[in-house]
Length: 253
Image (cartoon, rainbow, N blue to C red):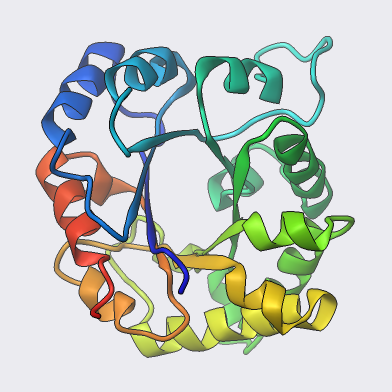
């Protein structure tokens, strides 16, 4: 059985002090058996939150990374730097990165390879725009992004990728896909992985849903057969809300 994963994406929120207070609040509360908890914080907060969460089961992730190990890339952060801090996860290809910072399927793939090179687990974001959804091209968009991200990975690497299916029209809008619709798309994404790596590998890949996930709808998504957790933005910023999300992700026995 795939272990559900709740990853909070703080985006450009929280100072170092605020992140420490958050970590102190969730200790022992966001550590739920059978669920993996991850906090993806801004670069400036990573050392402090890694230190504060030592000895807990809560993992820390970054929100982006460069594909090169070092070089003249002003303002960028490499996998070497993240690994040294104790970071274990990294979000790659979030729609905001694609929309505002010119990320492409090609750069996403290079970053996925760099993540594995440094022992980081990539959380790869895929999802359709509103116009693609309205044109009936949701699955096409997700197929192209998924296969591009996985290009060149070994079967072992592929099995460890976490995918976050985030329909772009649902991010930060208060709108969310229905649980059934999300499960259908996620099942389709899993089929694409199976087509390249086989069913055994595809069944190991954890695929989250993201897009206006909240404590009051997390259980609805988690009841679905192919949804393995959530990548959560706004609802992960308050400790109580984040704890509820982790609790709600526990699969019924």
